[in-house]
Amino acid sequence: MDMVIPMSEVVLAALVHASLQLQLGALLLLYHASLGKHVRKKTKTIVSSYIAGIGTLVFLAVAATCFVFDRYFGKALYAEEILIVIGMLLALAVVMRTFYYRRGKSTELWLPRSVAKFIDKRAKETNSNTEAFSLGVLTSLAEMPFTLVLFIVAANSILELQPLWQIIAVVIYTVIAIVPPVILRLAVRRGETITNIQRWRVKNKTFLRIVSGTGFLVLGIFLFAFEVLK
Image (cartoon, rainbow, N blue to C red; front, side, top):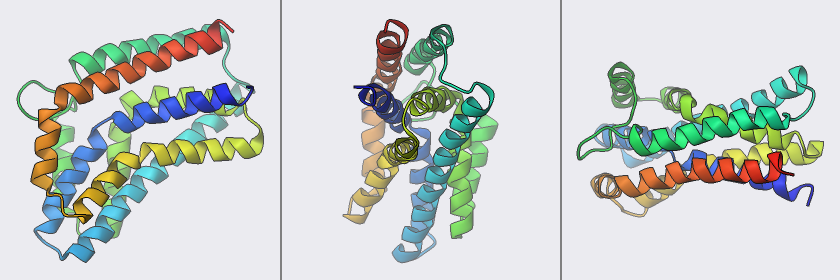
């Protein structure tokens, strides 16, 4: 039981992370641009590098947050500090429901126009694995206003585990976080078109927004039940 709760919190935080849409949106832009310029084999390597960039940033971010907590706090957060984290999660649940997507029949996100245009430009100009890797890192950094609190939740839970399980937990978080772009890559590989995928995202925008918002809410309730009331 001592390990079940922390691991459950890590998995829940990772699932909420996986529900966010910026990485998928940038990947669709990358696919659209790359398939028009390169043979499919080249596009596959570029997309793989993009996903590797996301995974690397997520892994390092979670590990770095664990290091900061261990170095400067020496232990997991107190119940009072957990309440602050819960407040952040509840606030983000509201933001996800109201501001994460822009109005209209599109999947445009909350990003400032300048940042969105920069990511769009980088996706269209990406021609090498290094550039694709950098784009994956960039999109992960741009999503930090929503993922930082998830890294905090994960790190706090990971520090309650034994050293070996701490490493495993960081890997588990990373793998879960990159599942959506991996699934999208497999779908395209099996013949699904970029247009159909984007059409599905537009049609189900409300559903995706509710899932993400509910995820933040459920994670906050879970923390309150097992970290504050315990």
